[in-house]
Length: 261
Image (cartoon, rainbow, N blue to C red):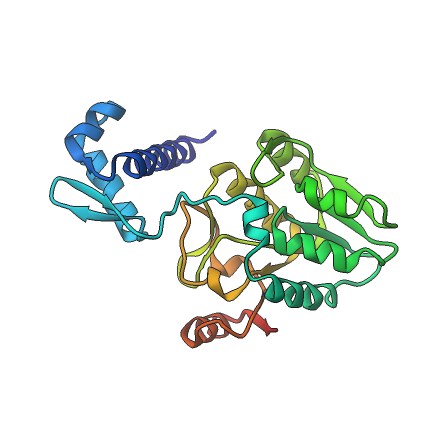
Protein backbone atom coordinates (compact mmCIF):
# COMPACT_ATOMS: atom_id res chain seq x y z
CA UNK A 1 0.00 0.00 0.00
CA UNK A 2 1.44 3.46 -0.91
CA UNK A 3 2.54 5.58 2.08
CA UNK A 4 -0.02 8.35 1.45
CA UNK A 5 -2.89 5.83 1.21
CA UNK A 6 -1.70 4.09 4.38
CA UNK A 7 -1.51 7.40 6.25
CA UNK A 8 -5.02 8.35 5.08
CA UNK A 9 -6.35 5.01 6.33
CA UNK A 10 -4.61 5.45 9.70
CA UNK A 11 -6.03 8.97 10.00
CA UNK A 12 -9.52 7.73 9.22
CA UNK A 13 -9.26 4.88 11.71
CA UNK A 14 -8.02 7.22 14.46
CA UNK A 15 -10.78 9.72 13.75
CA UNK A 16 -13.40 6.99 13.90
CA UNK A 17 -11.95 5.89 17.24
CA UNK A 18 -12.12 9.50 18.47
CA UNK A 19 -15.81 9.61 17.52
CA UNK A 20 -16.34 6.37 19.40
CA UNK A 21 -14.73 7.82 22.54
CA UNK A 22 -16.77 10.99 22.16
CA UNK A 23 -19.97 8.99 21.88
CA UNK A 24 -19.17 7.17 25.14
CA UNK A 25 -17.58 9.98 27.15
CA UNK A 26 -19.64 12.93 25.78
CA UNK A 27 -16.46 15.06 25.80
CA UNK A 28 -12.86 14.62 24.68
CA UNK A 29 -9.70 16.63 25.41
CA UNK A 30 -6.71 17.09 23.10
CA UNK A 31 -4.24 16.17 25.86
CA UNK A 32 -6.04 12.93 26.70
CA UNK A 33 -6.42 11.93 23.05
CA UNK A 34 -2.73 12.53 22.34
CA UNK A 35 -1.84 10.11 25.15
CA UNK A 36 -4.51 7.60 24.11
CA UNK A 37 -3.29 7.40 20.51
CA UNK A 38 0.39 8.04 21.26
CA UNK A 39 0.61 10.94 18.85
CA UNK A 40 1.18 14.68 19.03
CA UNK A 41 -1.37 17.24 20.17
CA UNK A 42 -0.93 18.95 16.79
CA UNK A 43 -2.11 15.77 15.04
CA UNK A 44 -5.12 15.47 17.36
CA UNK A 45 -6.05 19.11 16.78
CA UNK A 46 -5.95 18.44 13.01
CA UNK A 47 -8.19 15.40 13.56
CA UNK A 48 -10.71 17.43 15.55
CA UNK A 49 -10.65 20.27 13.02
CA UNK A 50 -11.28 17.80 10.18
CA UNK A 51 -14.18 16.21 12.08
CA UNK A 52 -15.54 19.67 12.93
CA UNK A 53 -15.50 20.73 9.26
CA UNK A 54 -17.45 17.57 8.41
CA UNK A 55 -20.04 18.47 11.05
CA UNK A 56 -19.22 15.38 13.13
CA UNK A 57 -18.03 17.13 16.31
CA UNK A 58 -18.44 20.51 17.95
CA UNK A 59 -14.98 22.02 18.52
CA UNK A 60 -14.33 23.54 21.94
CA UNK A 61 -11.28 25.07 23.61
CA UNK A 62 -8.94 22.17 24.32
CA UNK A 63 -11.22 19.46 22.95
CA UNK A 64 -14.58 18.64 21.36
CA UNK A 65 -18.21 17.85 22.14
CA UNK A 66 -20.61 15.60 20.20
CA UNK A 67 -23.08 16.98 17.69
CA UNK A 68 -26.69 15.83 17.62
CA UNK A 69 -26.27 14.05 14.26
CA UNK A 70 -23.73 11.27 14.85
CA UNK A 71 -21.60 10.22 11.90
CA UNK A 72 -21.16 6.83 13.57
CA UNK A 73 -24.84 5.98 13.38
CA UNK A 74 -25.08 2.64 11.57
CA UNK A 75 -28.62 1.26 11.91
CA UNK A 76 -29.51 -2.33 11.09
CA UNK A 77 -31.13 -3.37 7.83
CA UNK A 78 -34.39 -4.02 9.66
CA UNK A 79 -34.36 -0.52 11.20
CA UNK A 80 -33.64 1.06 7.82
CA UNK A 81 -36.38 -0.99 6.18
CA UNK A 82 -39.06 0.64 8.34
CA UNK A 83 -38.12 4.15 7.18
CA UNK A 84 -39.53 5.92 4.09
CA UNK A 85 -41.10 2.71 2.78
CA UNK A 86 -43.35 4.33 0.17
CA UNK A 87 -40.53 6.45 -1.23
CA UNK A 88 -38.27 3.39 -1.55
CA UNK A 89 -40.91 1.50 -3.53
CA UNK A 90 -41.30 4.39 -5.97
CA UNK A 91 -37.53 4.77 -6.30
CA UNK A 92 -37.16 1.02 -6.96
CA UNK A 93 -39.81 1.10 -9.69
CA UNK A 94 -38.05 4.00 -11.42
CA UNK A 95 -34.69 2.23 -11.14
CA UNK A 96 -36.05 -0.99 -12.64
CA UNK A 97 -37.21 0.95 -15.70
CA UNK A 98 -33.56 1.82 -16.44
CA UNK A 99 -32.58 -1.85 -16.76
CA UNK A 100 -32.63 -3.73 -20.05
CA UNK A 101 -32.31 -7.44 -20.76
CA UNK A 102 -28.76 -8.59 -21.39
CA UNK A 103 -27.25 -6.11 -18.93
CA UNK A 104 -25.01 -6.66 -15.92
CA UNK A 105 -26.34 -4.79 -12.88
CA UNK A 106 -24.66 -4.13 -9.52
CA UNK A 107 -26.85 -3.80 -6.42
CA UNK A 108 -25.32 -2.94 -3.07
CA UNK A 109 -26.77 -4.28 0.16
CA UNK A 110 -29.20 -1.53 1.19
CA UNK A 111 -32.95 -1.61 1.72
CA UNK A 112 -33.68 0.45 -1.39
CA UNK A 113 -31.60 -1.90 -3.53
CA UNK A 114 -33.47 -4.83 -2.01
CA UNK A 115 -36.66 -3.27 -3.37
CA UNK A 116 -34.95 -2.88 -6.76
CA UNK A 117 -34.10 -6.62 -6.68
CA UNK A 118 -37.78 -7.39 -6.08
CA UNK A 119 -38.75 -5.12 -8.98
CA UNK A 120 -36.32 -6.98 -11.29
CA UNK A 121 -37.29 -10.53 -10.28
CA UNK A 122 -39.34 -11.29 -13.38
CA UNK A 123 -36.68 -10.22 -15.86
CA UNK A 124 -34.71 -12.76 -17.89
CA UNK A 125 -31.25 -12.68 -19.44
CA UNK A 126 -29.97 -10.46 -16.65
CA UNK A 127 -26.93 -10.75 -14.36
CA UNK A 128 -26.84 -9.12 -10.93
CA UNK A 129 -23.60 -8.63 -9.01
CA UNK A 130 -24.11 -7.94 -5.32
CA UNK A 131 -22.32 -7.87 -1.99
CA UNK A 132 -25.68 -8.15 -0.21
CA UNK A 133 -26.70 -11.53 1.16
CA UNK A 134 -30.22 -10.11 1.47
CA UNK A 135 -30.26 -9.12 -2.22
CA UNK A 136 -28.96 -12.53 -3.34
CA UNK A 137 -31.66 -14.26 -1.25
CA UNK A 138 -34.32 -12.05 -2.86
CA UNK A 139 -33.24 -13.24 -6.33
CA UNK A 140 -32.51 -16.88 -5.42
CA UNK A 141 -35.61 -18.38 -7.08
CA UNK A 142 -35.68 -16.08 -10.09
CA UNK A 143 -34.31 -16.51 -13.63
CA UNK A 144 -31.64 -13.86 -12.92
CA UNK A 145 -28.00 -14.96 -12.74
CA UNK A 146 -26.58 -13.80 -9.42
CA UNK A 147 -22.89 -13.25 -8.61
CA UNK A 148 -22.29 -12.89 -4.87
CA UNK A 149 -18.92 -11.30 -4.11
CA UNK A 150 -17.95 -13.27 -1.03
CA UNK A 151 -16.21 -11.62 1.91
CA UNK A 152 -16.77 -11.02 5.60
CA UNK A 153 -20.42 -10.40 6.48
CA UNK A 154 -21.43 -7.34 8.46
CA UNK A 155 -24.19 -8.67 10.70
CA UNK A 156 -26.28 -5.51 10.93
CA UNK A 157 -26.42 -4.98 7.15
CA UNK A 158 -25.88 -8.48 5.66
CA UNK A 159 -23.26 -6.92 3.38
CA UNK A 160 -20.04 -8.66 2.40
CA UNK A 161 -16.91 -6.53 2.77
CA UNK A 162 -13.15 -6.78 3.05
CA UNK A 163 -10.34 -7.96 0.74
CA UNK A 164 -12.25 -10.94 -0.71
CA UNK A 165 -15.19 -8.76 -1.77
CA UNK A 166 -12.84 -6.07 -3.11
CA UNK A 167 -10.80 -8.54 -5.15
CA UNK A 168 -13.90 -10.21 -6.61
CA UNK A 169 -15.37 -6.87 -7.70
CA UNK A 170 -12.05 -5.74 -9.17
CA UNK A 171 -12.21 -8.62 -11.66
CA UNK A 172 -15.70 -7.71 -12.94
CA UNK A 173 -17.41 -5.08 -15.10
CA UNK A 174 -21.00 -3.89 -15.13
CA UNK A 175 -23.36 -1.75 -17.16
CA UNK A 176 -25.09 -0.02 -14.27
CA UNK A 177 -24.71 0.31 -10.50
CA UNK A 178 -27.58 1.14 -8.16
CA UNK A 179 -26.05 2.46 -4.97
CA UNK A 180 -27.84 3.30 -1.74
CA UNK A 181 -26.08 5.68 0.68
CA UNK A 182 -26.35 6.81 4.29
CA UNK A 183 -25.33 10.37 3.54
CA UNK A 184 -25.28 12.58 0.45
CA UNK A 185 -23.77 16.04 0.72
CA UNK A 186 -23.90 17.56 -2.77
CA UNK A 187 -20.51 19.25 -2.22
CA UNK A 188 -18.72 16.50 -0.28
CA UNK A 189 -20.15 13.39 -1.90
CA UNK A 190 -21.57 10.00 -0.95
CA UNK A 191 -20.77 8.56 2.47
CA UNK A 192 -21.39 5.66 4.84
CA UNK A 193 -20.48 5.02 8.51
CA UNK A 194 -18.35 1.93 7.81
CA UNK A 195 -14.80 2.10 6.38
CA UNK A 196 -14.92 -1.32 4.74
CA UNK A 197 -18.35 -0.72 3.23
CA UNK A 198 -17.13 2.56 1.75
CA UNK A 199 -14.19 0.87 0.02
CA UNK A 200 -16.39 -1.86 -1.51
CA UNK A 201 -18.89 0.76 -2.72
CA UNK A 202 -16.05 2.83 -4.18
CA UNK A 203 -14.85 -0.12 -6.25
CA UNK A 204 -18.42 -0.65 -7.47
CA UNK A 205 -18.45 2.91 -8.87
CA UNK A 206 -15.14 2.22 -10.63
CA UNK A 207 -16.26 -0.96 -12.44
CA UNK A 208 -19.71 0.25 -13.52
CA UNK A 209 -20.22 2.22 -16.73
CA UNK A 210 -23.04 4.16 -15.07
CA UNK A 211 -23.62 4.89 -11.38
CA UNK A 212 -27.15 5.64 -10.20
CA UNK A 213 -27.59 6.72 -6.58
CA UNK A 214 -30.92 5.61 -5.13
CA UNK A 215 -31.89 7.30 -1.87
CA UNK A 216 -34.82 9.08 -0.28
CA UNK A 217 -34.55 12.82 0.30
CA UNK A 218 -33.74 12.45 4.02
CA UNK A 219 -30.20 11.37 3.08
CA UNK A 220 -29.31 14.75 1.57
CA UNK A 221 -27.33 17.22 3.65
CA UNK A 222 -25.88 14.39 5.76
CA UNK A 223 -22.27 13.24 6.05
CA UNK A 224 -21.26 9.89 7.48
CA UNK A 225 -17.70 9.08 8.51
CA UNK A 226 -16.37 7.42 5.35
CA UNK A 227 -16.39 9.02 1.92
CA UNK A 228 -17.43 6.61 -0.83
CA UNK A 229 -16.97 8.91 -3.81
CA UNK A 230 -17.37 12.56 -4.85
CA UNK A 231 -20.46 13.71 -6.79
CA UNK A 232 -18.40 13.71 -10.01
CA UNK A 233 -18.30 9.89 -9.91
CA UNK A 234 -22.05 9.46 -10.50
CA UNK A 235 -24.31 10.12 -13.47
CA UNK A 236 -27.86 9.80 -12.16
CA UNK A 237 -29.81 10.21 -8.90
CA UNK A 238 -33.27 8.81 -8.19
CA UNK A 239 -34.92 10.35 -5.14
CA UNK A 240 -38.28 11.61 -3.93
CA UNK A 241 -39.80 15.06 -4.34
CA UNK A 242 -38.88 16.02 -0.77
CA UNK A 243 -35.33 16.94 -1.85
CA UNK A 244 -34.43 20.55 -1.03
CA UNK A 245 -34.33 22.89 -4.03
CA UNK A 246 -30.69 23.98 -3.46
CA UNK A 247 -29.57 20.32 -3.49
CA UNK A 248 -31.61 19.57 -6.61
CA UNK A 249 -30.17 22.63 -8.36
CA UNK A 250 -26.60 21.71 -7.35
CA UNK A 251 -26.99 18.20 -8.79
CA UNK A 252 -28.40 19.45 -12.08
CA UNK A 253 -25.76 22.19 -12.37
CA UNK A 254 -23.14 19.44 -11.97
CA UNK A 255 -24.59 17.66 -15.01
CA UNK A 256 -26.12 14.83 -12.96
CA UNK A 257 -29.46 13.52 -14.21
CA UNK A 258 -32.13 13.59 -11.50
CA UNK A 259 -35.35 11.57 -11.46
CA UNK A 260 -37.95 12.63 -8.88
CA UNK A 261 -40.60 10.11 -7.83
